[in-house]
Image (cartoon, rainbow, N blue to C red):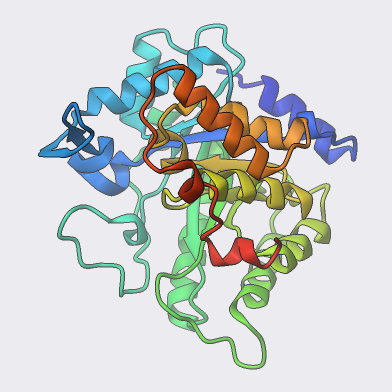
Length: 334
């Protein structure tokens, strides 16, 4: 299976130093079933938008994947292997220009199902998906790691990543690398965590052949300074992408994309910020608008609310509240 699609064309231009805003890559991250279990589709709501106490079935999540792929608005659809097989069986990708991607590992830092009690512990490396099962449905996947500034823990993480790279190379599966922030405070004596994290990423990949390197990174947006430093370090070989994190305001979603691109990121991989938006396709159009049309996140939020009103879609927040920038990292670049 080949994935020489729009994503690959954009990556090629970025690597050649020919980037324009239209080359910004957007991925829809719908791999949450590997983290949340039954709760991945969110709560069922009644006619007034109030939770009924029941969860929505997986079909809701997968129908949203199918709708987004067929819309052609995103460049990448990231899913679990089981969902990728489901989409393939339905012929969803067909001749679309959307690249299929699969989450290739599920370490304990994404074990977030109801009642789970793992967030306070360092990550235990773990993989469910078999690469020989992945390859028939996608030749691209996500591998995630977290640095803790702890020798034994980080060595265990990097040994697992090295083993994965060998297996992925043998299987003909490409990957992009997600680097989470730890879910608890990690000290970096004489520095701060964000510079420590940037150095760790650059160091780890310095010894990796171009044949085994990740296609791009997926990291937390830790503000302008951290993003610009990493993005400008080796832009032809180390393409920075940002992850979206939890749902918040529409302004947060659009401002994060705006700032990240300004400071050198070339990819946005958003999950909950897309899926739990009132209109998933409209929020992706708004994301593209703030990059490609260079409109402000404030104006794009207002246009988004106008769209909701005109189409009879109930907004989750009043416009005044939805215009708030609430993420602390975004206030650094405002």
